[in-house]
Image 1 (cartoon, rainbow, N blue to C red):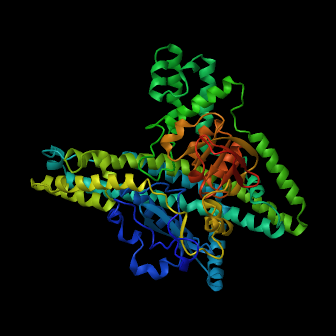
Image 2 (cartoon, one colour; image 1 turned 120 degrees about the vertical axis):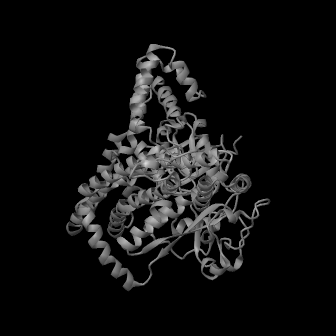
Image 3 (spheres, one colour; image 1 turned 180 degrees about the vertical axis):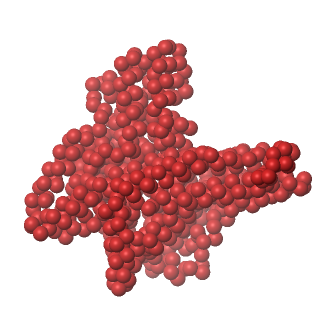
Amino acid sequence: MSTTDPALGAFPSPYSVPTPAGCEGWEEGYPYYAVFDERRRETDENRFWFWNSMHFPVPMPAFDVICIDSPYQAVGSWQNRVFAVPPAMGIDYRIVNGYVYISGNPVTDPEKIAERAGFFQARAGHYYEHWTELYGKWRAKMDALIAELGELQVPHLPEYEPDEVALADDRNTAFYEVLDAYGRCLRLLDLMWQHHFEFLLLGYGAYATFVELCKSHLPDIPDQHIAQMVAGIDVLLFKPDAELRRLARLAIETGVDGAFAEGRTPQEIDTELARSEAGRSWLAELEEVKDPWFNMATGDGLYHYYRSWLDDPSIPYAALIGHIGALRAGQKIDRPTEEIVRERERLAEGYGALLDEATRGPWNDLLALSRTVFPYVEEHKFFCDYWFLTRWWNKVREFGALLAVHGFIEDGEDIFQLSRHEVAVALDELVLTWATGGRPLGPHHWPGIVARRRELLERLAAWTPPPALGIAPEAVTDPMTIMLWGVTTERVQDWARHRDGGNELNGAAASPGVVEGVARVVRSVTEIADVRDGEILVCGSTSPAWAPIFSKITATVTDVGGVMSHAAIVCREYGLPAVVGTGRATSEIRTGQTIRVDGSGGVVTLLDSGR
């Protein structure tokens, strides 16, 4: 952790964080408003900022900043300006050494909270009353948006325009088409994020209201038990893994399972399968599954290198190897849904019986509402974060290819080292010099910038960000901050007290059970294939896209996350113990170390010093 300024409390001042050696000037890759600026020092230094390692675990490439701006614009619009969530407006962010820190903007005036409550009750109530109908319309909008993205053409710049442009009545020249396509590409992303948050906040809102009622009448109820009462509900996001389990059984039934050896690449497996009729038949079945289920991503989708399973099949093939190995060993590979449902109903019946007659009715109504809206909390990710975003990043790659063909950058992937605004400037010059026959400066201007930013990202990736900056709040009250990120008053105090050493880590009790085993620390999606059967997954956070490897692991520990984080939800649905929001698991635990995960108590114990 960086040096703490005693005058500011337990966390470093955001203005005292040192720049890693060789990383001077890192700020120039980011918007002026995205960094800690002296002109905002008086306010920014006295706020609480925490590293959003759940969504942004590594330094941000310049182009990828659009996936900070656009979602925070969207969530703020819905939360603050449309639904007027009473206690919270939106989220501010700042970038420090390439890493994203966020801080919520609370509503503290009681009169303003009451005013906002009137808007929220009327507008959210309309959604809750017509949820199925409105969600159906939302699905149609997302289908249309994904289709429009697929139809968007990135034109090339020809030596001479075709006759249609010269002679037809309705035509545009390539200069206009390129600039229009780029602008439309960016606006489609904004539209996706608008859709993304339309329902999500209401899913959290219904659950938060249920939590509030539970705690007011059942003060000793654990957060974990509340979460378990809405578990065991089938959601579309688990369908891809269900298909992989079916394919694993099919591989054994048809005798082609020998191709799925630990350590083999997808290409090596496919090559062996293609040598036999049974193997080719299995591959044909796989092709049927790919649309739409391989539109999953390898991560949360917010970075350009989170490819879809179609582009990078390492996760589904690692899952197939794990499923086949488990089946050979006589193990069950299905989610324990029936057991989870039985426990859900047992808890609901038991806690319901403790309530008086006047409270039980509203409690049952809120429980039913939470179960109705809960699937969306995970399901939207399939359409937005995975299906749309992986294809959108590929569309941006087409603009990168255009710039590369004309020498503005050396490789199409280099486009992600430029901001979206810089890409617009580069395209402006490209079509200008194409149209006029002039000599472009871009090929001499952009490659040096790209090379420097690549170097900066590599250096910044070796730096360990502190979990928080600024002034620790007296209390954390934003329900989304608590449920999604797991940043509670207690967790902040734990971060503040932390000193390296000791053999226990505390976090949120996300999914019940106690397991001892060998840790596997995974810091990036590229390391997922290294996970072996029986290991305990230790990571910054997980996404539902990682669900297929959950049949291989025995428990999960994360740095960040609350009881409604994706890691917590997935672990409950797979019946795996989980402790989330430890703040420092990936820095304290080493691969090969034996640890105990108490998912009921929220404690991780380091049992040996590891390898």
